[in-house]
Image (cartoon, rainbow, N blue to C red; front, side):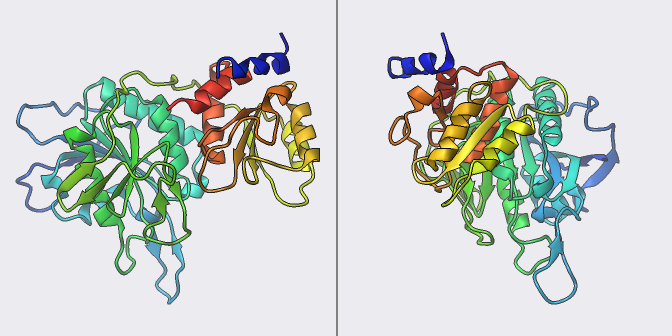
Length: 377
């Protein structure tokens, strides 16, 4: 049965590693000991009844580790401060949990890539498999934090908390938000109530689930939102309040792929007067999947739809939207059944791309199956 016939059935089935000794009685800051590289096994800090929770901080850089220029202005460089610097900037962090810290990368998140994603996923799964930690915090730039969190949400095998945290202002800026955000993230990672919630993002005392979170403003402290569902919870001082129901995450949705990359999936951005060149370029450069960031309900010009339909003969096409919220509805203005397309449901183009990459790694290309996975929560 051909792809376009199959889709018609949809209506029937809709690098240094640091360990920071942080006992509650540490008086002069964190003691730092060099260990093996991140991919090697680390010494397990045993879980002792009544002892503080163990939290591992995996640093990747970002504005939270950035430093502003000395001259007047707003210029700064991301990924300048070490993970030890970040910890030292938060008084009392060692009283929340016993901390381990590792530097995975120190980059601006515009340079985040699949190799680092895979390194993070393998390291997190190893830490949990070894019972080496009770929760993980990842320091990360805000530009791509929603993509990294969504990737990890799909491949990490644990009910324990995985919390991504960033900052809007660099570490040495006036009123830097990084220290408060990091304290909140460690508090969440150490909290039993945070279990069973998948990967989360926390900034500005607001907790978001990885599937829902998106950056909505270039520079506002309140940039992150979950427009389709609202936040997962809130932090107020030492109090953490969740407003969503936990679910089991002990079995990952996908295995961590082998290698250092994922199948190529390109996003094409729709606009008035759009020509099909972007689609042709994606095909020519070997994309195995294409996500349309369409106007409105995932729409685009007829010439572009025709090009996507042609491309769909031997690759997967998913219609998403450049609009900041809402669901792309199947068969509204575009006959997805006839053209063999899937829609992204309520996933934005960036997250639809991540999910499609993971689907391709396990050989899922049938648009009916792709649609089911896009709809799954």
